[in-house]
Length: 100
Image (cartoon, rainbow, N blue to C red; front, side, top):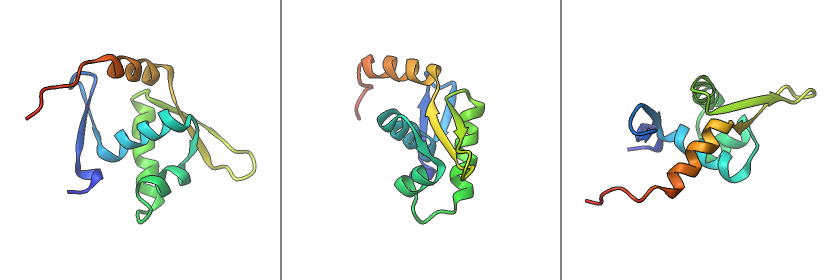
């Protein structure tokens, strides 16, 4: 099973994200701002850029990320929204789930 096939629950199961999307959120939390190309190279260096773009757009639709464009290259630079940062802080304080 690849990372993109794995499913990650967000907000107590109301929304399910691909493994790529969940890892992208983690990278954005750690680095604060990354371009589409940087995210793709970090997470799926062998994948086409279209996949990363589609996943990031899904996160944007969910209100978890936003982006700005570089005037020269027109490449998107992504960052977490306030809603995603709030969710992250709650998730960090939550006790770990059951093991097994």
